[in-house]
Image 1 (spheres, protein in one colour):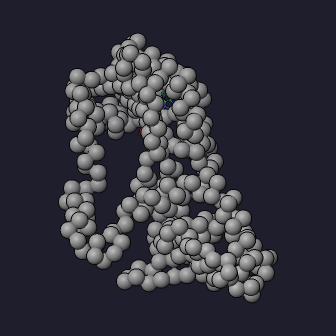
Image 2 (tube, helix red, strand yellow):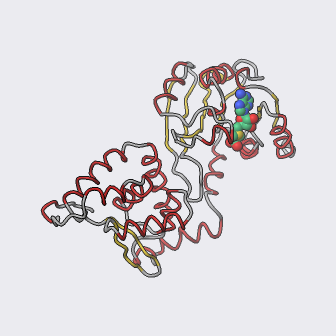
Image 3 (cartoon, helix red, strand yellow):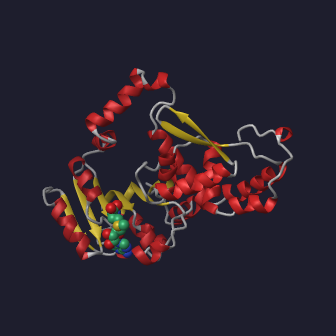
Length: 322
Ligand SMILES: C[S@@+](CC[C@H](N)C(=O)[O-])C[C@H]1O[C@@H](n2cnc3c(N)ncnc32)[C@H](O)[C@@H]1O
């Protein structure tokens, strides 16, 4: 539907009610919106929408049948793209639906995931794909794995730092940090998590595991150079007080990193995993950090990995004033 041209619309109309029946399904509308922005394969749509192929294929069939989509073969791949609406009514209806949908959380989430999926796509044209650049990107991953470069970047950390991983869970992050820092303190309230963390971290003599709640962190004032609160805030009733506590433990100039979910609509997470918050808006995090006395606040939306099934994440960093 790129470059929609109303004059080109045929006035033959299947009727608004027929059109509404097809566009009455939110999932179909999300598929149409994605395909309007970018031609996509079934598996790419599955990754973006986090749905099984059978579900996506069923909706694609309906959209193709009603003339909203067209399919194009390219080598072994089949790409689905949006077609120009077949009538003025169809265009009017889609314009209305698209406006509503574009502003929705699910659509914003789809767009973020789409970026991740497109980033994983091999070169668009055959020329790029067969070029040295295209081959090297694939070879690099095949030889050395996914994002080893980010782990290597930890070597840039100042080795004199003391850092706490607040809500450390089973200690993944503390284990990644330990080889690069003077001291790591891993804190969590759950004895089960701490048992697993202690096992994982036993090989490091510069890591200390402490049990405690983040509302009352078992670390002295200004003891830390930096702290991380990764995938924890959505579990706590009062994130503001946790951020203020983290601030108390940091020295002047110390930095805090918060990683958590962007707003999402997965209500089931409340009962299944005890989530208190269904993600956080940029503004809310910024306000809480500022209210807790932090400055130099930076908020970044992380690009979702193609195989990740959870909501999109953000990273917010901030500094305690000197
Ligand atoms: C989803 S896990 C994330 C663990 C780890 N940060 C990671 O990235 O894998 C959340 C962790 O936060 C801990 N947690 C939740 N609320 C807490 C609180 N109020 N005080 C201390 N730990 C808490 C839980 O016990 C759990 O280990």
